[in-house]
Image (cartoon, rainbow, N blue to C red; front, side, top):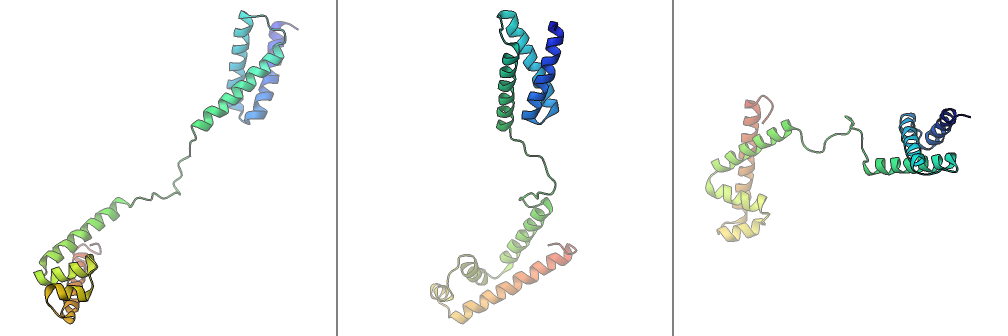
Length: 167
């Protein structure tokens, strides 16, 4: 067999050898080309006793390198079905508007009602503790909290109506 015919036969064998391992015909083509290039370069510098054995060894090393390279760069395909965990911009805007309305409603409250509401609902103080600190009875503390909640609900509902269903 001539050298060219021998190389073609070896190319065919190497392709099937590599494609069985990679299961990727395109990658197998590339790896066969690289194998033959390295094999011919090696043959120019040294005397090769068993060209087929050396070709298979080079091909196997390239297949291992191929998989090492791809395992390092694990790529996950983008999928539109996987929702983003971050809130949508519209939701962020709506939340900011609600916080703004809440803050304005809180500022519009009489100072004592606001103070009682903040202590009870935001800081989690007990009715008894607030009553003792502000020298009030517990019923008065509860009335302030109820009135504050009613005022907040009214202001939030007004803002929602003004925005056409959005706060």
